[in-house]
Image (tube, rainbow, N blue to C red; front, side, top):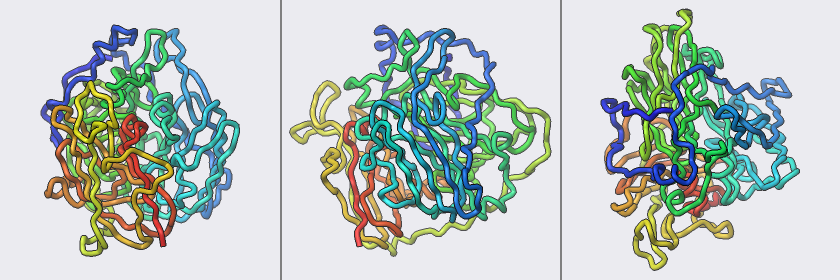
Length: 490
């Protein structure tokens, strides 16, 4: 796919300038595919199938899933080895309701250990699917817990120690839709695959033989594995036909480490209606949105005037014409943007029992900040790398806390980070002392933190005790040890 310079005049929540290049021009010489593919847009956008509910009860949902190997021809005549859930690449969408009992049997048919993490889900620690819940080859893992959160778009992916980046890169990811009485009553598009469209956006790079070029050198650890081809639902440059009316796009930045600015070629305005953890109070009008790896957003787009092109710009790479959207002329359906979505239970700062500080930075072995060519402890949180035998923070069950997170990246490296908390959704209180933009004022579980930036978040720790993770969601940073553990205790 050709890279293009796009979205330069869009609304900017964050600057994309001065970040540095991916180094792909050097890597191309070592055998990476770099030739742009013709922009044909001939492949229909695949819609992940809905995973069959084996119970079919309003009170419970039961599923079965297999983790296995497969292959996909991303380039004609070149079969790429892949991983997938119930298929060759990516996985089905799981749809459940708040209040349901959720059960799933996950069979690992791989030759290596994996896990299955429910990203964004509020759940008991034993079913979190982090590195403390490995699924050995040939075994089945059977989570069983109640859904206890509002309507939201979540996702699932592996989280095995040191293997997360590799397994996600090869295809292990899928979406979870939670519905509730609010989503039922809102007059918004909700017909799956017709006017309610899931979009899993990921970048990849390939060796000359068509295999994924997932390598582990210093550059890739520090900057993340940034691709020069873009996939939408596992396909390069698909085309999507939608009704000529209001359409809902559920966006997931499912990449390993790329940070995306997403918008349209005609700069049309869309309305953000939900962030990671569910609906905002009121829609936020934008014409581009920045999502870091793991973040989600639901947007309403008006297609009464015709189709457009989806554009995706990498913070540390190129720009892509990701997908062509056309219309079928069917205008029956929701005709306007709702003025109000839901009333949020905002957490007052006065409720917090304390403030914890977290410093995300790059450290040399001796404690000083290091240059790109130096080896050392590299990526740390509060000066420490992940140790599964160490509990880094203990949090009181039923408490409310403010976490103050600072990206103390050396200026010469200009390295963004993100922070993802397992189990809980949080609210962003401030970015460098300022209120977050409107689209970040809902519930979140992952937040982008730029070099030199301090972000304050607040969350309630309720219902469950046990050990959970917090980490940078740039997966190469996570696998290198930019991760810690907090235990909720009575």
